[in-house]
Image (cartoon, rainbow, N blue to C red):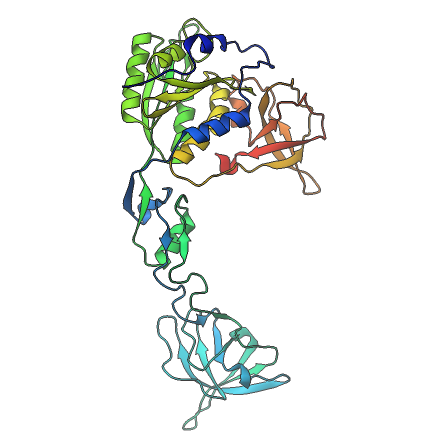
Length: 436
């Protein structure tokens, strides 16, 4: 494995202090985001998959319509196909009903003056007709028992040529790009593709992501907790967040705080994954070996961010794999994943740029903050009596309070230069719906 180290070990260690909100070595959030996006590229490989298997996958090529949709001029309503020239400007007119057109069974004939054809939704518009009058706006008259008796329909004024008619190609035209490369296939897209008769599509191969937690204090669910030990929640949070993205997961469990064990885990992960994510071991403790191990095996682009929670975040490479070293605090793992890791993985999946939705709403409580770092506090959006939205924090915003994320439905984003906001002030929020 041919790997380099940038910046040098001394520079990285010199940047390891996390106690100052004005630390000049910490990268601003926008700068870090831009550097990550520049450093990662979409996976090149693609595969052809069956339509149903394409749900949630990223298109590797444009889908071009092979047909017009709809294929024929047809009715948008149950009613009567008529000639607009036969309809009155005032009063009513009575037309002879000469047949019925069903969806999938067109009426074979040409409509003449004074005639109407009973037509169902989706049925091909008869030749000669240029208007469909919905059945609720008509009165049907039975033809009677005499020989040659014919049903008739009475129609009033207020109708025009072209009404209640779907034109051929009105939805999609032959040769039109229906879905562009880079789109993640949604449920409605399956219906659109099926309407074209498309049975298979080309998609990017699934991104392979390896992840593991570090720390001798971590225990798996079901194991007894000794003094000072905690259950490994970060791996479960990462599992959930990565599963939502639809990547191929490689769960490597918990790796103890041991240089040889970490080196072996890093080598194994880099050999099989496009991206490697760790949690823990990126701060300044004497037993935090992740950064030292990474420095010996890979390349570090940056180590610290001007954000809270989540200041110690390592980004770099292990061979061909992108590396993210997330903090060990549970809230920091979630925040840094959604703000930095998810956008990078989406780009690597080949997705078109997806910016998180933000809202500007008033806060219902005072939010404390010191200048120097962008903060992502957890909040709950509320609808007020006048219908407008507002946000309140979930309570204690400590980076170890994972329940603050579970109770929340948005991030409250406070700019680096902010010194806090008062109740009633407008703040930026990122709703979890769509982000998560």
